[in-house]
Length: 374
Image (cartoon, rainbow, N blue to C red; front, side):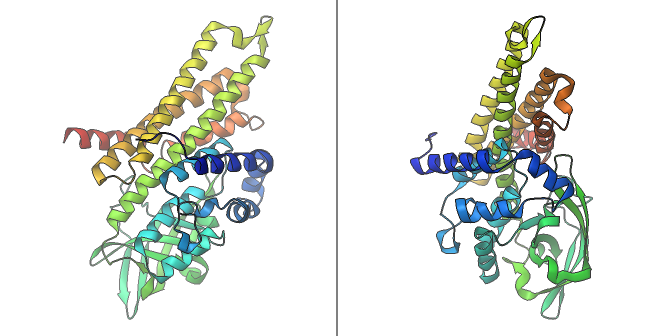
């Protein structure tokens, strides 16, 4: 396997990193989350128009640049380093992957809008009884004349309050299917109970009470959505793992810098050997996590079993590293580490949340064990 980035991928990384360092302010983004729209739409448009990252992994015929999993990894890590809250993974990775595999005129049109920054799409898959298992679907889609009626409740739909469209999993007579719902067109039959998550993102519990859809709202074949959903879950997991690597690199760098500035007993605390050892351990966790993520990314297009093993291994490694690096960074900063004033506290919250996205650390550990011992 080739572990080096191409010249084009390095340019993508460097351009995005420069953009975020000069134009993405952490305090401004948190203010938007807490008191504004929940995100910065102008930044989203810049991602599309100035950088082209929203279509980086999409085909050129829908306005993308024809990249793949490595481009997604590069982008996600840079976004994690800057602690970006805009819904890149939800829209441009998970939803876009589902739409691309489903095909059809409506999916193609929506992919063009995603690449242009004119649509935000969120996947509504989790339910009260499903836990980490998206295949356990109780939401129903009933044929009604030439269309469909959706009934059910989806929980913790991340980015739903920002979304123009939802991709909703529902059970038909043929099995698990995927439906495209335009939020505004659904009217009062779709109710969102929105809330801010611990890591300063927006999510909602979504009630579907007879949402009426046209026949072409069914994406792909009736009852055949699970293989694509399974892959989308792994793609999302790999992307947030890459994001976590970016977060941890920033947290480690800030902690090392703080240890040089903070004085105790007449010298910088970074001069104490026990703290040096702690930061070396943090560095080792970050590098192990980065290697595991790269292996997962390079296996995303392998057969299902190999893909699942690599992604679960990365998710477990990230879960352990995120906890270790985040907790130690807070401890080395003292009580200030959990305040709103320091960036460390915000990064710690994100690293905590990542451990549960697209399957918890425990569920991925169980899946890995099943795949390697069965």
